[in-house]
Amino acid sequence: MPLPLKGKKLIPEATRALKLLNGDNAVNRHVPFVLLTNGGGMTEAEKASQISEIVGVRIDPKQVILSHSPMQSLAEKYREKRVLVVGGKGRKCYDVAKRYGFTDAVTPHDIMHWNDSTWPYSGPVSDLSLLTQGAIEFSKDPIHAVMVFHDTYDWGRDIQIILDAVCSKEGVLGTRKDHYNVQDVPLYWSNNDLIWSTDFPAPRLGQGAFKVAVDALYKQLTGAQLKSTSFGKPHAATYQFAENVLSTLAPTHTKRHVYAVGDNPAADIQGANNYGWTSMLVRTGVFNGGENATDFPAKVVCENVLEAVERAIAESEK
Image (cartoon, rainbow, N blue to C red):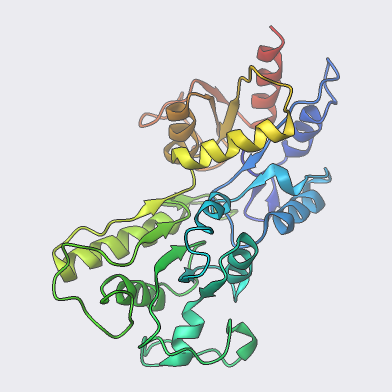
């Protein structure tokens, strides 16, 4: 199920839908569920608290899966290695990365503090509390991976810094490779949403649009294809992560039929269909009209999340 919010506003039917799942239904049955979103930029506990306050229904942090939640699986690989964490407000994504176990994470703020000519159109932060540690010599200490945890608040700066890292010799900023047939610095994205729905009347550009820009510029600069790994919907790693969480929420349910409700055909519906879940498309977000999506059609189309939950519960009782 997606977040019951559109931007920071409550989707009208969401509170009733969540109460149905929590047992306030005709059969008095609690239905295990997770809120799976391509949003992020904060901890799962913070998001759960935010949703609970707006919706009026308590959400456990374990029920919230953000776009970067599955990236916890990378922490062991990079535990003692420097990773560049991109996106989000201030140093929130750095704080999330540290909680996940990335012990040597840095941000674009640290790089701008090291050399403010990295991107001359944005100055270094005056609030030094946004820096992750003391002075870092990026011309000597390499970056081992770039991880985009959330949408960036400074496209120009962060495109430049990401390109600096992936085009460098073994992750040392300020250097350039002689050839680009081998990529030294891996790049990870928490989601590929080209557009997403807010309370603005039309969809907004998302992290996927930022990825398109980075990929195109890398190709133009190097002649090579930029390689990367993506998480979030519709990628299978995120659905596997969600499946594992559902197993912990309902360990006695050995035969599980999962209904996936969403408003974005390219993310929610494509991902659910590919993973073998029953996809349910609602008309309250990116998709808002027509009988079904033409590019990634859902198994079921509903007006809103409440109708989808009611149908899912009814189907599961047959």
